[in-house]
Image (cartoon, rainbow, N blue to C red; front, side):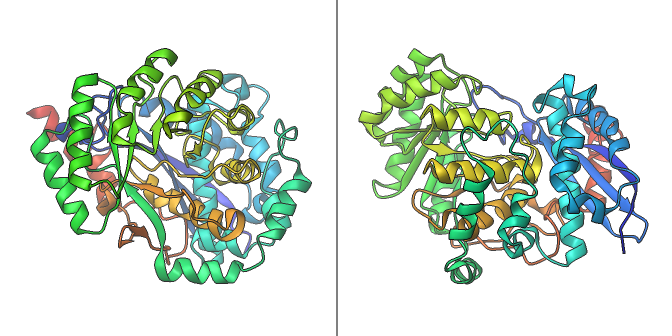
Amino acid sequence: MLHTIISLTVRDVRFPTSLEQHGSDAMHTDPDYSAAYVVIDTDCGLKGFGLTFTLGKGTEIVVCAVEALAGLVVGKSLQGIVSDFRGFYRLLTSDSQMRWLGPEKGVIHLATAAVLNAVWDLWARAEGKPLWKLLVDMNPKQVISCIDFRYITDALTEEEALDILVKAQEDKQHREEEMLKEGYPAYTTSCAWLNYPDQQLQQLCTDALKSGWTKFKVKVGADLQDDIRRCRLIRKMIGPENTLMIDANQRWDVAEAISWVSSLAEFKPLWIEEPTSPDDILGHAAISKALAPLGIGVATGEQCHNRVMFKQFLQASALQFVQIDCCRLGSVNENLAVLLMAHKFQVPVCPHAGGVGLCELVQHLILFDYICVSASLSNRMCEYVDHLHEHFTSPVVIHDACYMPPKDPGYSCEMLESSVQRHQYPEGDVWKQLKNK
């Protein structure tokens, strides 16, 4: 069957996480985890599901952008798309009029990610495989054919990327078996959102330690003395042997970041995440250079627009940990490019997954990275947040603080229809009830 796409629908789905301060950080004090949720229908009844992550207000803008792209998708066959996936990616990102809204960044790129995520989900379902397995089973040339190398060949050529994938074929089966048995290492962000009170923070850390967690991230950046107090509290709870990371969510100027993080160096954080503007590549490079003697790396990427910016971050030695995101970049296609560039520059990938559906999505990519690209777990881990998984038909499975490879066909981001209806904004029951309070 050709699986011709006959319709694409998108809905504004929001969860009122701000009520309990879930997701709160120094810059985003009241996030409502939300998604522009896409469903692709085909003539044979098979569906594809995709989303892009937002924080509440503005989701309606992303919805409009998805609707603007729908005409480029409806009428296409799945076979036609995947036989020239690079061409289809360029069709969405290079429309001669709509690309002016980006190009390949901002709202239009978030919308592109939602659409492409749904297409990848459709492909994996058509093949009867979870997405990570679909990718792992591709031969290296098939993987390469999905990637747009435009603008990055000065850092990674198509031939170099192919060579990376060919070399990683060795022991690939062993690594796949290892992942199926043991899972991919994770860290937790759920214990220390910025506005959690100390008692809650302590209880969550206690529970996490009992469940086998050894890697913890703390939100910082609002008040230095409070950061010192909270980092001391968490370091005391988790002990010197466990891993601590800190995340400022873009709060500081460059000099301020260096000074502030130096004041937190006694707590031995592995990295400082998003210390300054996510667009400031040279600023990140300066921070990286200044913090290196303290043994603190710089991590960023959750709001890095595209593969071109990642290229420059890597070329400038401006980050020591690459944080890919399934909805900020142009879906799997563009993330594949970043995984391969990161490997060439020997920088570990530690994906961002703080948000609704992001854990479900990114687990597939990091499994592919280990099995088919990096072949290493050194300094690598995937973020996990314990929020909203109950709204998905195939929620993540965590065992001993590791992501267990998904088994259901698709990209794992199909939501329960009952959850979508209840949380659709503004007419869902959840939002009607909040409005009436």
